[in-house]
Structure formats: C-alpha cells, structure tokens
Length: 238
Ligand SMILES: Nc1ncnc2c1ncn2[C@@H]1O[C@H](COP(=O)(O)OP(=O)(O)OP(=O)(O)O)[C@@H](O)[C@H]1O
Ligand SMILES: [Mg+2]
Image (cartoon, rainbow, N blue to C red; front, side):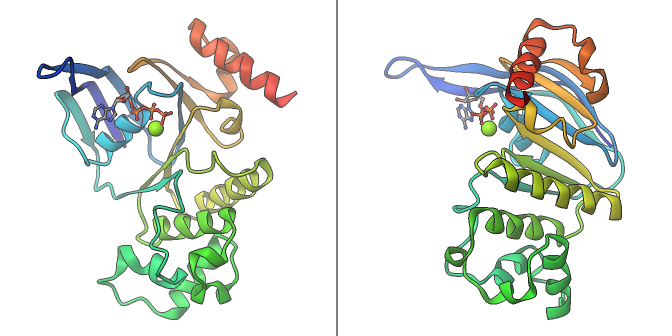
C-alpha cells in the first residue's frame, strides 16, 4: 500500500527575462493506493497526473508532504510514447531483458513473459519496426512485468492505440492481475477507457485531487467537474 499525505509540488517557471517564480503544480494531495487494486487517475491535460506519478516512482523530489510505502514496493512504468521508450536497435528479447540484465534469465523465461502478453515466442528476435503499435506496447508491458513489480503505473499507455487493441491489452492486464497480486495505477484523460478495468477512480483538476470514487459508485459523484467527465464518457460509450 502507498499512502500519500498532504503532498505539494511546484516547479520554477520563468516570468519575464530573469525572474523565476515557483508555480504550484500539485496541491495538498491525499491518496491511498491499496494493494492489488486498479486505481484510475483521471483529469484534463496539465492537471498534474504525470507529475504525481513521477513523485510516486521517486523520480523527483517534492516540496512537502509524505509518500509512505507499507512493505517493500517495487514499481515499474509503461508510458504512452512506446516507440521512443524502446531502443530501435535492440531485439524484443534485449528490450525485455533490460530491467533484469543482472539476473540469470533463460530463453524459456522470456518466452513465458511473451506468452503472458500474448505474443508468439518467435517475436523475441524481432526489432521494434517489425511490430505494430499494439504489439510493441505488449513488449513494453512484458518489460514492465518481468521484474515482478508490486505496482505498475500506466501513463496514457493505451491512449494512442485503437479501441479494439486497447480492450485486448486490458484483458491481458486483467489476466495478469488474476495470476499475481499486482497493483495498477492507470493514468488517462479518458474516463470511458478505464471503467472497464478500474476499481476506483481518482479525479484531478488543476493540481488538486478533487474526488475519489469506486467505479460502481460513479453515479454518486459529488463534484461538478467529475460529473462532467462522467457525462462526456457516457456519451462516448453510447
Ligand atoms: N519539469 C517541469 N518543469 C516545469 N513545469 C513542469 C514540469 N513538468 C510538468 N510541468 C508543469 O506541470 C503541470 C502538470 O503537468 P503534468 O505533465 O503532470 O500534467 P498531466 O496531467 O500529466 O497532463 P497530460 O494529460 O497532458 O499528460 C503542467 O502545467 C506542466 O507544464
Ligand atoms: Mg501526463
């Protein structure tokens, strides 16, 4: 479990030619991420979702507040920009091997991982340009799971794929979750895409976490902004 309390983060931004001011980006965030849940983090562009995920991953410092890990959490991340997140000169096997390069993994281990993301073993010797977008994102998911993390953060990881591929990959993630006790943090600007797999939805607006609701309780949203997102998502689904 990860417990975030009263988290503040600002970035220095230039104002005029010389002056720099600290602009608050995350304001008083309180959020618990429970073991084995799928938590969706939803909000408009610039609301601070990726910043929050970088803080959870420990990639950046924050101004104040706490991020507490109960137990030894191991995290990995899958980004939207999958074409840039892999080295085009590496084979699929080399890409998947990266996070576990110091471990003795066999060809069989890599084949097993590919099987989990539903790719044929023969793909191990392929290069990124020989894969479709959806297949390459499967490879990125394989790379994320090979180190057996407790938490995977998906930052708009499926957003640029077409909807049928998104649904296929969500099924892969749901399958994976049934086999392990992994936790997912699913970041997206599109609420309609996450109600399929999320347990809870956290809504962000202008750096604040304005509401958190169970998916089966979205009908009782109390903030105007969250209700607007839900209405927009429902329109997309009908
Ligand atoms: N390294 C940085 N330096 C200065 N400002 C930053 C930095 N990183 C992010 N910001 C600012 O913080 C705000 C939140 O950015 P963030 O990337 O967290 O938003 P987001 O919710 O992930 O948006 P999107 O849906 O477009 O990915 C933005 O206004 C952005 O310009
Ligand atoms: Mg982002």
